[in-house]
Length: 330
View 1 (cartoon, rainbow, N blue to C red):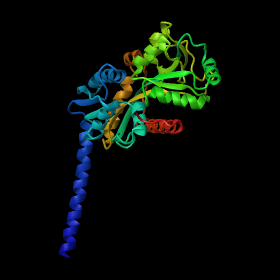
View 2: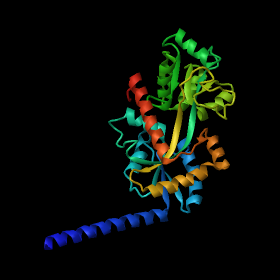
View 3: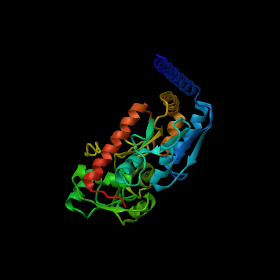
View 4: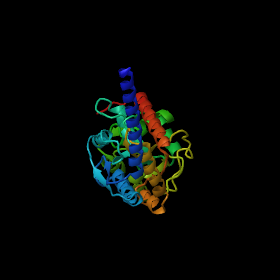
């Protein structure tokens, strides 16, 4: 009888402790944030991810009443910073400003070296911006439209060159996706970054590229490159005269680089909701939308659930492109 009473007492104490823990957790989430928040940018200062992160960090500081500090943790194509956040304490005080398209590609292309799971290691807060890609060609290429370019590629299989920012980059995988959707055979020419690729494209060493709008818009406006189509469902404000791929006759081809803020998996739902609500208000502000647009990014807000779904879809899309194209890591 004593053992039964003792076990019952222990069970009641355990239950009370559990209830107390839940109450304390809820109270802590309600008081969040109580100290500065780190926003990890897994790339060097100055790039699009860094600039978007700094714009949002400044606004989040005002909205949350605590300083949001941007920390650059560059290296391994963004994997070092992402891994740091994945392993951080899930309390909402360490967040990742991620280039989620690149992280999704890394997850399927570098399976032996990426230590986190893009879908399981993080709790998505919101997608915050998308950057569309645009087809561009050297002005000497005899293609005035995307249809012309596809016809040219079909007439010269393997002879039309298409540059990229490197093997496994979003630009490269967009080219592989284009080959499958359009039924063409173009020759991929990888570079070490968009800068060298764009230089050779303007110089005529390569014929074409699918590049981000921010990187290409200046050269298109200056007449150094010809824009054929934006791979999005709406025209880019920076290139209003360039049609979408659907308008140009290539349905089913939409490719954008996606940016978002995520927390470590296990972060309390109340904390995620607090951050998501703040970002909803921030991303609706005209000054924020304009600041992101200057980086070529279209301000975007989603619920955490929608963000998770889009990250999963992104991973599945690129896994298929990698498999279909036989893409191998360097």
